[in-house]
Amino acid sequence: MPRTFKLPHFYHSPVISVVKHARREMDARKRDLSPTLLDFGPVRFKIARHFGFCYGVENAIEIAYQALAENPDKRIFLLSEIIHNPHVNENLKERGVQFLMDTAGTPLLPFDILMPDDVVIVPAFGTTLEVEQALRARGVTLTAYNTTCPFVEKVWRRSEEIGKQEYTVVIHGKRYHEETRATFSHAQAGAPVVVVRDLSEAQALATVISGEKDAAFFFEKFADRFSPGFDPTVHLKRIGVVNQTTM
Image (tube, rainbow, N blue to C red):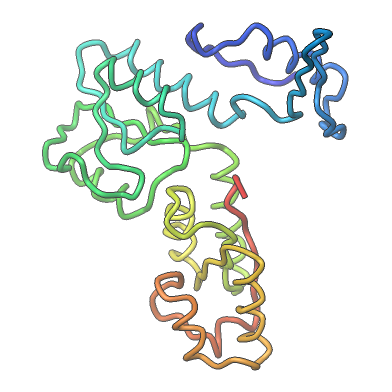
């Protein structure tokens, strides 16, 4: 039975909740991707098969509001936007949650204001090992309210497995998206890494792998998208691919 989450009532839509429940009952394995038709006669609505908050988002929202309920007398911080939804983020701000960084990773508040008894919430996208280390240096505990999506963590585990088998990790994603920044950080701890955004870039990487293009082309084409010490003449002989979950 799928897990249910306790979200604030204002995030629930009675219509969408009924639609999602009905689709789960009829198609638990989500093999039918056709939209749901709501027919009101003169007006008909088609609701996409995957609509509303996903598992990872519902998990993140539940944990964030749990942190607020359990810590009424503590300062509560979010590393950055918990999800890409301005209504959710604004509501958390209105309830006193402070944001440490923006979505690009630019500091909004210095980490040196943090105290060991502060609550810091990790967003659904996860965070980099470097940020984790900086927060732990301040005595901050990250495990209590870590909202990292389980499917993002699955990508991290797969990246680790690829590295242990001495493959290079190719991340299909947007290099500076919060999730891919986090995946890049975790993956490069155990393997060479390069990020490829789309088919065009995959084709460009293929020309380097085949020898049609040289290392100079790689370094120009993929500037800022490979791990330190990356050698395209060595590190593209064995590759494994992981995806940004939203791509």
